[in-house]
Amino acid sequence: MSPIAPPGPAREPSAPDATLRVDLADETATAAFAARLALALEPGMVVWLSGGLGAGKTTLVRGVLRALGHTGKVRSPTFTLLEPYNLPKFPVYHFDFYRFSSTDEWRDAGFDEYFRSAGVCLVEWPELAGPELPQADLAVRLEFADSDADGTGSARVLRLDAVGEAGLRCLNAAAAAS
Image 1 (cartoon, rainbow, N blue to C red):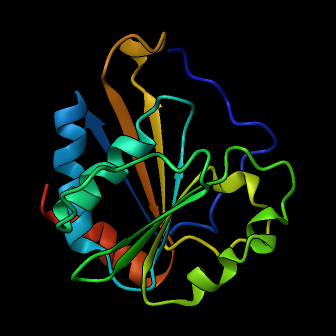
Image 2 (image 1 turned 135 degrees about the vertical axis):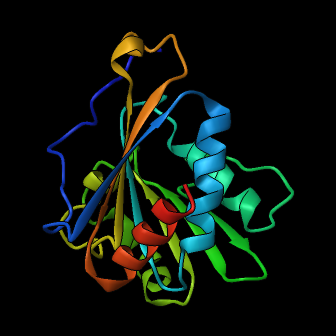
């Protein structure tokens, strides 16, 4: 599968306080990093997940959920828009805004209440939600590695941008566990 740029303009997080780049050789490496990230997440955090189709956003979420104790299926919320997970540590809300045609859809669907909760919001395709979407504490960008630019391989490059104190604590904890 070849990488496809998201429709519309890319939305960058506020100026990051820190950035971390991680090379991921395959899906196993993605799951291992996701486990480190999961342990660093804090209640109330917003994590944006950006990257082309097939770049590994849902794979990363699956790894986070497994590390937080979820044992069931992890579905991509491409059609449902939201998959909630009530986990022992805190709830996790996995959003996918890929199919949005209006920047108001996330709010019209009543999703704004989730961003004011003690859960962690993992948002795929945040750039399609518009400027009213709450700012990310941590913005994650997954891309195909140069050697896999045609999308046939499994190597990825992950970039994390921390914004604010919670994002910085999360990024530093995930980096220290690497």
